Image (cartoon, rainbow, N blue to C red; front, side, top):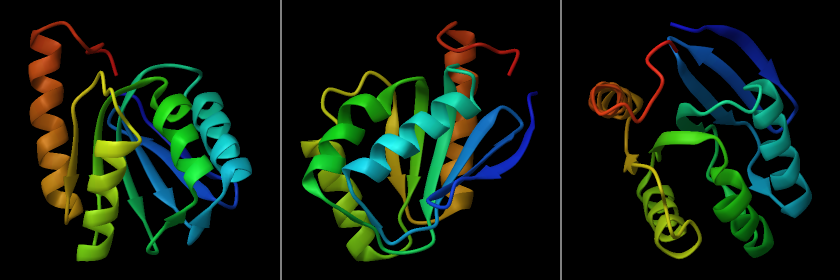
Length: 140
């Protein structure tokens, strides 16, 4: 399993643990410029390699329309499976709307959870299935 130390850029921290990319937003709002920076930072950090990803936020996120549209297209690059952790009902609603309106079409499994433990369990189960179906690199 691949591990890589935590790195941050002021908007997000990234860390690869046991082959899963952990992404934590540390800002409360994201505009288009920040969205572009986030995606570029993630792609560089992962060497443009596909990874399963878990995304959480320290705050309720306010993402403007242009940033949502960018993340809904360019933000999908090099993601093999995605678990999103929304820690309050407002965030759950927001993330589900983002998935339905801005992230379509989605070419990988993606689901919203209200706690990280459930999200990690779902990720691990689906990664195992994807390895068996040869849809994901098992060397990570």
